[in-house]
Structure formats: C-alpha cells, structure tokens
Image 1 (spheres, rainbow, N blue to C red):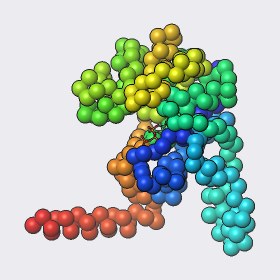
Image 2: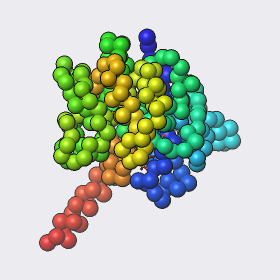
Image 3: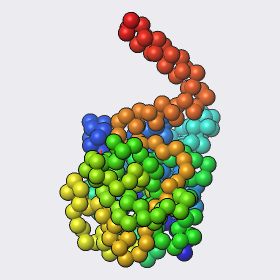
Length: 293
Ligand code: UTP
C-alpha cells in the first residue's frame, strides 16, 4: 500500500521562541523569506504526498491564511507587473491542505491522534516543522521507499553527539542492515548518560494506522505530555518498526541557535545575499580579533 497522506502537527506552544510566538505561530517564523512550515509542505509534495492535514491550535490562523489565496495582494502584484513575487505568492495557494484543531496542546502524540479520522485505515506520514532536511531525494521519499520494501513503519533517524541525546527520541538498535535498522526500543528524551545509542529521531515518520490504538490510550510520558515515541514503542511490540538513517543535511529550526544557523546557511545559498554576508562575517571576525588584542 502506498503512502498518500501526511500529518504536519503545528499546534505546539513554541515556548522556546517566546515572546515572538506569543501571537504568531512558530511554524510561520521565516528562514530568510519562507515560513518554516512551507519548507515542510514542499518536502511532502516533492515526495509524492497527495493529501496534507495540518494540526493547528489557538492562534494559528496565519498558517491557514498563508496557504490560501490573497486576492488583493495578487491583484496588486499583477497590476504592478511584479511577476516573480506573484509567482511566489501563488505557489503557496496551489497546495490542497486540510486543517484540524487540537483543542489543547497535550503533546505531539495527542496532535497526531487528533487527525485519526482524516487518515482512516491506511499508512501515513508525519513531518515535524522542527527539522528541515536538504537533499536531492527528499527525506520523506527515502522513508516511503523503505516502507514500500518492508511494509512496516519506518522512522527517520540521524546520529547526534552523545551530549545531545537527552533532547531527542533515541532508538536502541537490534541490528543495522546498511541504513535500515531493526529496533528493540524507542526511548523519549533519555536522561543524560543513559541513551542506548546515538541514533536520534528526526521528525520524519511513516506509520501504520495501528499506531492510533496506542495513541488512543492517552498515556502521559516525558514532560507530562502524550508522546508519539511511547506509542511507537508499543507498536514495535506488536509489529516491527524500523529506523532508517536518511541522507541529507538536517537543520534544527526548533531552537534558537539552530534557527539562526539555518537562517545563515540558507541565506548563504542565495546569490543576492552571499557576498554581502561574507563581507559582514569577515568584518565581525576582524573586529573580534582586534578586540582580543
Ligand atoms: P515541540 O515540542 O518541538 O514544539 O513539538 P512546541 O511545543 O511548539 O515547542 P516548545 O518546546 O514549546 O518550544 C514538536 C512538534 O509537535 C507539535 C509542535 O507544533 C511541533 O511541530 N505539537 C507539540 C503539537 O502539534 N501539539 C502539541 O501538543 C505539542
């Protein structure tokens, strides 16, 4: 069975970016000039996903507006002959997206569970906006290919330094066959020094619909939230759930330093910004060198 539907949860409080996220969704924070959630939607479409559902919550209206037509803006850009800008605006309104509200931010697992009626009885993808992955073959497509071969759930992972494992869901591998990994246990945010490996879950999942049986138990996990990782572990006890070490550069935009680093990296990829930025960095390095003397 092919994966055609994807859930993008976007109902979290975004506390790591307060006060910016008091009245604005963190998913709308731009990397250069594109909201983070648009990168995620583009990856889903490039991977062959046909139906996207975004789980929203209080204060998230601007996400729906972003993927809708903005008739006045479009007319003005057309009148002024600003066709490049018009194209970029039209690009975001072409996508067919559905929305559902998570009534309370009870955790990622609860957000996914809220979308169960939209998914029905078929395998589906989950993409989190905290990670942007750059690669010729989109990250999600790599996982979908693995799903087609195994017929089982596949979770995207990459290796992280040992001192960072407490920030992630971590897998305890049984055996590694190339990049595909059979998993004994999935552990959400293990305490420092207790992680069973360095393979961290990176916000891309292909899941079979049986996951909803476990999400429906509404068990509270790390941080008092209903955790997706805990439900994946329970699913793994009744059917195999694989991890896959995907190819690609992964950018962590869910916390401040990663967000700034990603902004700089993406800006450096823009020919119209690159030289000016490099000049700025050179000047700043020179200043810091002079101040140290
Ligand atoms: P995060 O924990 O990274 O997002 O959840 P957050 O809660 O918004 O951010 P902080 O930690 O307070 O800064 C991962 C993803 O799950 C969604 C978030 O929107 C994010 O995309 N999420 C989280 C929900 O949709 N609902 C929730 O109840 C919790």
